[in-house]
Image 1 (tube, rainbow, N blue to C red):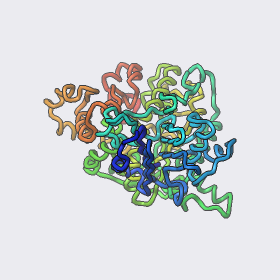
Image 2: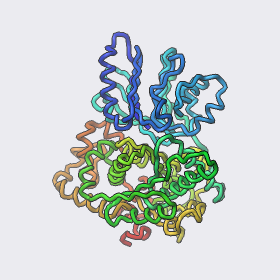
Image 3: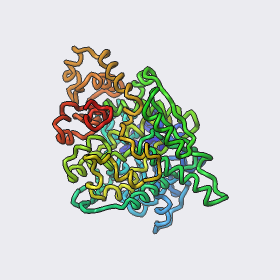
Image 4: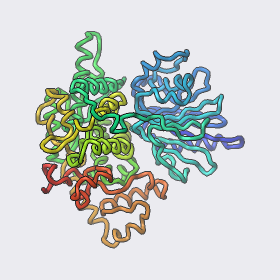
Length: 557
């Protein structure tokens, strides 16, 4: 991944020298995302700046990518996993200038215009400038794995950037660019390009997916996302999701050599990474998983004080004041720094599984399959605001790319296309049982059937408890009583939330930035709608999985 910055709508008389300097300064705010190289394109109507993290074709592939005739200029943050198939399917000749997987976007635009985005399977946010037509296209991947923000500067020019911090002070109307949408200046409006039948429960009712089909689909997703020309690894918390990713990656890394004596592994051995406080449940489980899978494992420990010291930078990088996101982002941010120091530039991670399969513990209380399914759709729609933002920005703060095979678009169609009645938990059936059953034998039983631990819990229960205690000491009763006056937009409901909001405001002042962050009550990461599933949820609302009494093993029943 990388970062992009674009400015469109320049007019005759604009000072291009000053605007170029400004664009470079704004792009520099997100250079942590792309420390390997910087590229810039400036003409009379557009500016594009790219900060590169070189993963595929590291020696070439510099951006912005220009077509052979110089008329198309493209800046992309992301990876296109099906680029080879798309290149082979082109009906018009296109003279590729690089080995980058992203250049196929230019070729698709030549054939299909802005609607070429529908063919992409990947994680991406891009801005494309058509010089001849004086037309630009902005698009974001369907789930929102890659961040993207946009707004208008004081002269009405459209600015777009990978991170909100690049637009602060420039755009008064800064907003998140919606996932699964494309903006084509020729049409002048946002258009949703990603609509799936499985969003409706009626389209999935009665559909069963065999364990074998589910397993094969996920293994294919992991294999697609191992596309890299640089050292990579896997995040391994010892939970089900990251362990399944690691199991598939380990098998493919070995098989590449076993099946071809002349082949080299993507890296000599697969390395796995975990982090936690001393005594962390995740660290212990990760050791078990790593030993079984044969990875070179690195379990890092951090202290509560180290996590606390990192909070201001975490909030600045992740661009949120959401409590559960900050709780989980901090250890991930610290882990990314360790990974970067070891020379690894890409990791596979397990985000998305809980949203697809109903893995959060509150799903045990879902009243029926229809409502279970509706909640999974709500959770997938919100991923770009929570787990995707956390994984992407925590890792990219140190120039490490996180890929998420569970959110592979082909796998998503399989997993979301099944009737939710096969996913339901409760009455003695553990969450994500359908996924566990599909991978029988792939992991030690203690890992395959381990109860769900949210990352902020799994790093050590003392982490969340300590944050609450620290916020209690930092925010007075008087301050908290006036929370709605100081923060009338989405006022914090706990002292912990107030403490984070105060730091966020220092970096991102104004209502426009605050509006990009979701609000509302949650139980164990639920949507607000799911709180109605159990009267006790309204009384114990907290993002921690331990808030679900009678389900989480460490909860107060």
